Amino acid sequence: MPFKMSCWPELDYFHCCCYSCSLKNATVSLAWIQAIASILQLAWLLVHLVKSEELGQIFEFWKNTLCIENITHLFGFDSRDLCIALVSEASILALCCMLLLYGAHREKPGFMVPYLIVCQLGIGLLVIITAIIGFSEIFRLFIVGLGIIMAGSTLVVIASYLWLVKYSFYRKLIERDRRSRVQKDEVPTEKPTTEQETLA
Image 1: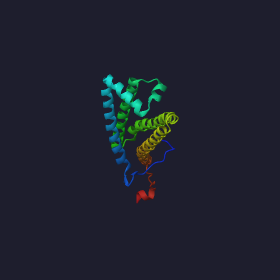
Image 2: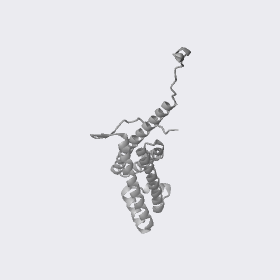
Image 3: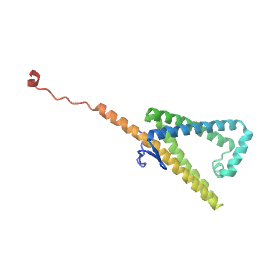
Image 4: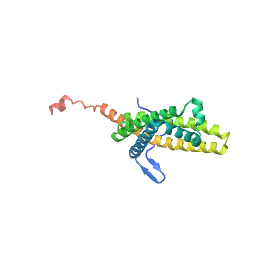
């Protein structure tokens, strides 16, 4: 059964400022960018995962600059657990981006479904993380907490729009395939010839 979310509208074109292009071109371009970014992220994490002394320094940097100590304390993560989780996330995202790229380029919507589901879950997780970190910081440092909430909300809006572009292209491919199947199933009815027409 095709993947469908009735609460989301469907776009006809990709619009960005004064630039617009077809949904296919936008989806393929975004898939290339995300695939390359996820592969680079995966390689960077694997390199630093091997170097445990650098891993601790990186984790401390994240804690001090991104205010993630609340998340790590909440779920009981340490630096290595968090890095392994990020490596797993980057691996899954890279695989899903490659499937999205293949599905969009060859116009095979079935290959796009894993990315659409994983990305939707990622957006939901981003909302939860932004709310936890932002509201926990807003009671200590109002400006910092407000900045985190505004930055996280901006990322959610941008990610949602880019996801909607890919979802709209997926739905158009599904609709195209559905119409193609309907046309194939429609057997043209031949008008029965009478005996007089046959003799004539």
